[in-house]
Length: 402
Image (tube, rainbow, N blue to C red):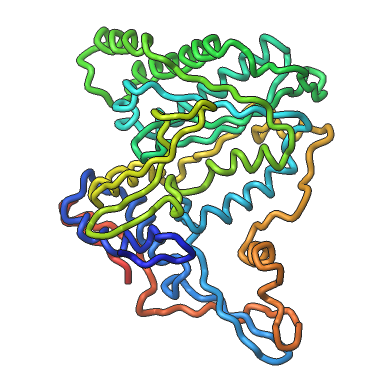
C-alpha cells in the first residue's frame, strides 16, 4: 500500500508507482499535456522545482519552503488557485442572488465529443450561455451575468461532459442599471430551457460540420442529420437550482468545480497490488431527498489512468468562461454596488498557512521579525525537464525528468 500523507493517498505517489508501467501499453495515445501534468505533479513541492529560502535579517534564522508546480491538474495546487480565483471574483459579482444550473450533454454525443474535445467543449460552454442570455433578454429585457465551468468527468471518472453555470438572478437593463428579479424564476419550465439549449448546441454543431472542422465517421450529410434526429429523442438535461444569495456562497460553490483535478485525493482509499480503490457519488442510487449514495470502485492502474487522463485539458483551453455582464467587455458596465469580500481569502501559501495555523509562517520565532526570501535552491541533479519523445512510437515513449 502506498504511504498516506494527511490521511490522503497522493496522486503523485500513484504516478510514481505505476505510470512507468502504464507507458509500456497505454490505453490511448498520451498527449504532451498528460506528460507535463504527471511530471509536474510528481515534482510538486519537492527540491526538483526549487526551494525558497527565507532568512531573518536580525538573527539569520532560515526557513526552507517547497515550491508548487502550479499545474491545473495537480490536486495540491488546485486548492490555492481556486482560492486565488475566488478572491478575484468576489469583487465582480453583481449585487443580487445567483442560481446554480447544470447542463448535461446527451450520452450519444460523447463519442463525437471525444473525437473533437476542444471544439465540442467550447460549443457546450457557449451554447449553454446563449440559452440563458436569450431567455433573459426575451423575458426580462436584461443581460445577466454568467460564469460557466466545464467538467468533463463524472464522479466515477468516466467521460461525462457537462457545464456548471452560475447565473445571476438579475442583470443590466438598456440604461445600464442593475435590475434584480424577485421571486423564484428558477421554477421556470426546465423542459423549455432544455429545448433552447438543444437548439443552440445543434446549430453550432451543424456549422462545424458544414465548415469541415468536425472530425467524424459519417459517410455524408444525410447520415449526420439522421444521427442528430436520433439524439433529439434523448433527454437534454437542464437542472436549475434554488438561489444562492451570499457572494461567498456563490463563489465558493462554483469554485469547487474550477482549477482542480477531477478526483479528490481524499476519495482515494487504497492503492496496492496494481489497483486503485476510490469513493464516488453513485447517482443511480439516491435517498428520499435525492442525495446520491457514496459507493466505492476499484480499477487496475491501466483503467484508472485511462479514465483520468481523458480529463487533462489541452494547452490554453479555458475551463472557466464568462458571458453577459461578466464578460471582459461588459464587466465595466456593472457600476452599481457589488458584493465585497467579507474576509481574507488565502490567495498564496503564506495566507493559507495563516488561515490554517493561526500564525504567520514567515515571522521569525526567535526575534519576531519578518523573514525575507534570499534565494531559490535547486537540486540540479533532479531539476525537471518535461518532454515527450517525437521519434519513438507512442507505446515506447519515455518519461523524462532530469
